[in-house]
Structures are given as C-alpha cells and as structure tokens.
Image 1 (cartoon, rainbow, N blue to C red):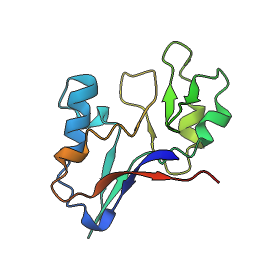
Image 2 (image 1 turned 90 degrees about the horizontal axis):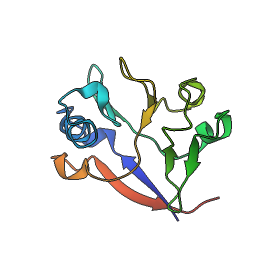
Image 3 (image 1 turned 60 degrees about the vertical axis):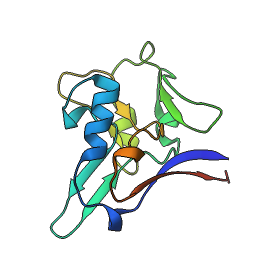
Image 4 (image 1 turned 90 degrees about the vertical axis):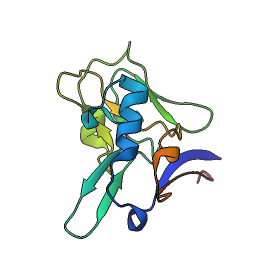
Length: 131
C-alpha cells in the first residue's frame, strides 16, 4: 500500500490554514511560500496542490537525490540535491516547489500534519494499492 495525501477541492474554502501549518512545522515561519502544500485560489473555487507520490520526479533526478520510502512517499535527500530542478519541471501535477532563496525543491511528504488545521477535512491521508 502506498501512502498519499488526497485532496478534495470541493471542500476547500481557501483559508490557507494547511499552508500556514506546514510552513510553521517545517520552516518555523509564517510564509506560505515555504509550505509543502499549496492552495490555488480560483474565481469560484480553490485547488489544493499536493504531491500524489507518482514518482515521476524520481525517474528524472540525475543525482538520485529523490527516493521512495517503504510507505511509498517520495523524499528529497538534501545532501545529494544540486538544485537542477528537473524534478520540478517533470512533475505532472506541479507539486514540486521552489521558494525564493531556496535551493532544494520541496514537496508534500504525506506527513498528515496539515489535516488537523483543515476546518473542512478537504485533505486526507489515504492509501492506494500500487499497480
């Protein structure tokens, strides 16, 4: 079974609480650009951007800085990453991010810490079987 963050855009109210929670936990700042999950506000809705652990980025990484752990979560090894951003370019759902001043790409690691901050339960940790 593979662990991933599943999102339900129809339930998202674009409060950005998940982004704030993520940035505070991982970077100790209230900067939404440092969140591993993103909310894109649209005219009449919101879209939650989070990694679905598809592993496309792993396949293109020239330094093998991206690996998949036992739960199926793609992780970035900061010591091996050279900041070429091929993973960002290859990501089919644009869930690999770079923030201003940052060299290492960031992405959701399905830790689930954002779930408690979401007032509408638009984000859930789920498992899916591998093909």
